[in-house]
Amino acid sequence: MKEITLFICIVLIISCTRDDQNKNPLEIALSSQDPKIKRVMDNLEAHEVQIRYTQIDRRNDSVIFTDYDFQVNDSLYFYPASTAKFPTAVLALERLNRTDTLSMHTKYYVEGDSIESTVAEDITQIFAVSDNLANNRLVELLGQDAINGNLRKKGIEPVRIAHRLGYHSDELSTKPLIIYLNDSTTGITKPTINTSPKKLKLKGIQKGVGFYENDSIIQKPFDFGLKNYYPIATQHALLERVIFPENFKEEERFDISDDQREYLLNAMHTVPRKVGYDPITFYDGYCKFYLYGDTKENIPENIEIYNKVGFAYGTLTDCAYIKDTKNNIDFMLTATILVNKDGIFNDDAYEYDEIGIPFLAQLGRELYQQELNRH
Figure (tube, rainbow, N blue to C red):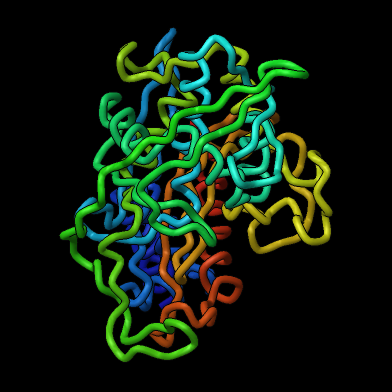
């Protein structure tokens, strides 16, 4: 009897091992029995999860990407929220290189506004705390048509940036920027009129059962048809070009200098406390959902997370390159999840802290652990 029991145990172990070998790393992570993962996977339809995970290997002088996808679908809409600030920041640096009088540290302000800033300061604020006003200033510099057109020229598509973020709406005309050419001289940029966005025709463009508008509830699905569109594959493509430009043809890269790229990368992984923000309100994981989003502990110095998050309308998204300098591992991960149990939008009743961020944090940990064990 003991021999039979032992034989059954061995068969089960071999069977489980073979099952794991047949799964890709993303499937293994998502089959975790950790409740932070399992409760989402048990209710997938409600959460609209999409994930792309990229393993990175190096052979001689080549960097090789191996992608693993879960439900990634350009035709299935999710609201990108502040992840749309990533392309704006990169393209603002590229824009500076077309004007001799502008640099990252040139002071400017938007006509009609009193806030003076620089592109460098705006980029720091965008990545450290996802500042809306910093993003919108750069949108005034670029214009929506230029953002979309320049991304498409580099093969970063489909994409449609249609509006500013926060309190700004869908104004088609950009505002002039007042630029300090020196201590006593200013210049002014010309406003541009951008193309009026057409309604997106995608699956899931209407969501939920109702939404609030002017403090009144409207009993019909919320229509995202005129909102920004920036799907998983597009976000991942931009991240790859920023982190590994040498993997792409010259016309697919961003035309930014080495100094600009170094500044951008530093801004992407620097946590808020290191650029002067209150660490109680803006803890390390505030804009770093993977691995540390569900804790207020400081991120160890050997873990560098180069990323941009977005959270609005119950949708959480993170697009990240994660690097462990101590253990010499790195990988890329872009994921989105919807957490809106009541199906009502604009009611601020979303399960970010209860379900969404814990899922993304644990997903990051599951994949990180696999990377540690991978040769």
